[in-house]
Length: 155
Image 1 (spheres, rainbow, N blue to C red):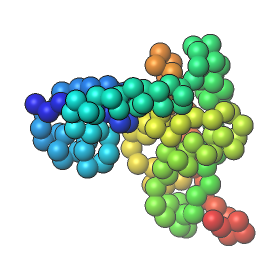
Image 2: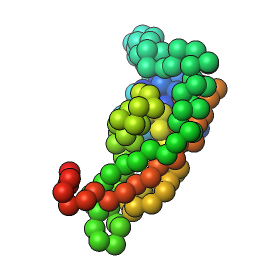
Image 3: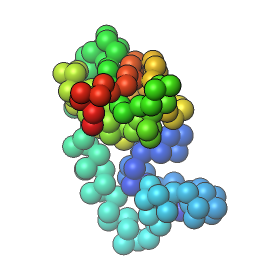
Image 4: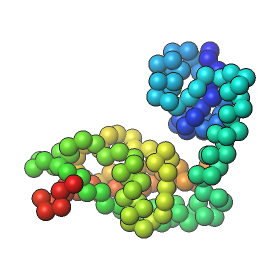
């Protein structure tokens, strides 16, 4: 087992700043190369406080604000315009940064891209659902409407 410090939130494992033990292969082949974690050392233990402070700065302050933001996210679908072929297949996939930017452009609030989870890759136009972890206790389902960009306003 490897002892690591998470630098990003990993679904099913923990939040940034948590010290966890995982199997060596999972740490070596997935978490460390993608930058989701660093190897635990006594010196690295000091970084935990700065990671937790950064996470707290990004987090929604209180539960009431989180519930209000979740209600806004659930209220209406977010429209994302992407470049697509004639059959509706996108040139690339919709990423969490694009979803976060579309939510902010729609005036629903500012969310961190790290708190957005999309179950399957979005590779074609249509309606999708993403999960947004607004607060530790509040999760909202965000409806996405992916449409093809017209030839006049191509990215």
